[in-house]
Amino acid sequence: MKRFSRPRRVVDRWFAFLTRLSSGDRFVLLLTLLILLTALVAAFYRYNAHWLTDTPSNGGVLVEGIVGTPRFVNPILAITRADSDLVSLLYSGLMRIDTNGDLVPDLAESVTISDDGTVYNVVVRPDVRFSDGTPLTANDVAYTVKQIQDPDLKSPLRGTWSEVKVEVINDHELNFVLPSNYAPFMENLTLGILPQHTWSDLSPEAFPFSNRNTDPIGSGPYTIKTITHSPDGLINAYTLVSNTYAINQPLISTIQVRFFDSELAITNALRTGAINATAALSRDDIATLPPDTFIVETYPLPRVFTVFMNQNQSTILRDQAVRQALATAIDRNQLIETVLPGGAEPTALPIPSGFYDVQSTSSLPQADIDATKQILEKGGWKDNGTGGWKKTIDGNEVTLSLKLVTTNAPYFEKTANYLKEVWQKAGIEVEVALFDQSDLVQTIIRPRDYELLLFGTDTGRSLDLYPFWHSSQREDPGLNISFFASINADADLTTFRTTTDEEKRTAALTDLLTTMDEETPAIFLYNPLALYVHTKDIATVSTKRIGKISDRFSSITDWYIESEALWPIFIHTR
Image 1: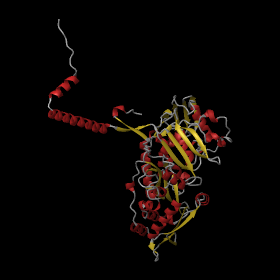
Image 2: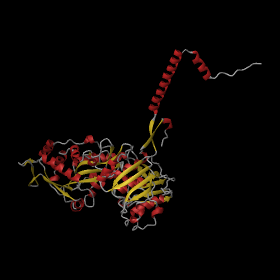
Image 3: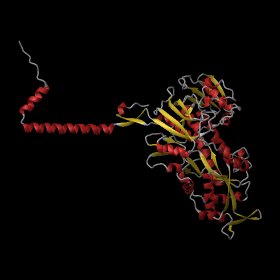
Image 4: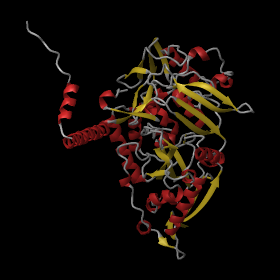
């Protein structure tokens, strides 16, 4: 019979081997093994560090500071910064702005535009709900638009919706029917949707006074958890948490929104850590904060500070040489550095910098006082003997002297004084007159009683230039306050406003800008930047081409505070 013995264990063999070695050999062997083990551990750590990736994770608290008190946290009534910021967090629309500044579906599953551009067919996603769990349907969309169109409610959005018909096809489909094709209409579909079931019992008179305006239900990424009131009954803080019914779940689990009565109070709150983010501060305020503690993000806004030239009011301004000379004297970069350093982008066009491909800061004309004087000389203007200019116009000798009017807001006043200074260097006499904005609008702009007017245009994200430059808009309440009139420009403005064909729009805009450069009906200076300051632990995702500063939250679901280190194979794509 064959006998089998049990194999010796590997460990036993190892120790047996060691016992047969001399003490010196054992030392050398163990040292070699220790070195090898250390090298392996070091190699593992290097490999691990090389491949580990910081990955956003859920958690963290964003504490946002806002100046003011919320009153209408309601997408159809919101006007103030406090209201608009909260609407962006609590509500969602059929469309939203992505990080590239393009419109993409949000609550909508699809949007189809008819060939003539007058019918927008919208299919609402069947899986969307409000934060209370109620399904969001086409009826809620129609209800929201109906409230905007109600003249008794006085919604600030009524003008953009007044002639739009809404046809509900079924619970998840509806049509928007426009009286004529209007390319910027798609922007309207970012409107936050109200839940009909919580608002329909209110009359238009009661609607603005309901506490539902400050304790709303929406379908946005966040919902209200708690509301804190001050001793006098005013809301001083909201705590928002992730809306479990939202289409995209945010990574930052909690947002606290705190309200302050001044920029100084906001600044102090940032210093003490009471808040960690705000869009309420100017560049000067931010400069007082501790260096290297905060990140400052800039967002160009679609508003262009402009000098409008009223040729109906001034024979001097009918002279093309004068208009060109005024424009040539201005160094826009120097102007910005003087007036609001770091707070604006220069532009020599009626569209803000960075909002359309035809715009480029490299196209800015070179400022040149000598060239300004040469333009005037070629235009027939002569030295009047005192450093100024004179010319005979319509049989009368006139001195080159103009009056510039604007609002008494600080940046407008500083800009006006800068313009006066550079124009006077070229021998152009300028008087500056300042008005309260309401007085400026009612007594100066509406009756068109000015020669030079420093004011701003807000074209919106869609860059709708029609109201400001089409000849049909020259009389009040139109906004063509330069009395600009051109058959070619009118055709281009109409095309740019009505067609959805991007090639045709670009061609029309390019042609329009060429015409305006030749005619010089106004001088375009700069578009302001909105500033957002936050602590370095908050990782934001900037959105291009926003219409207002509250649009920064269009990418809020991708912001994060917490992160974890993972190997790529373990990273879950959101």
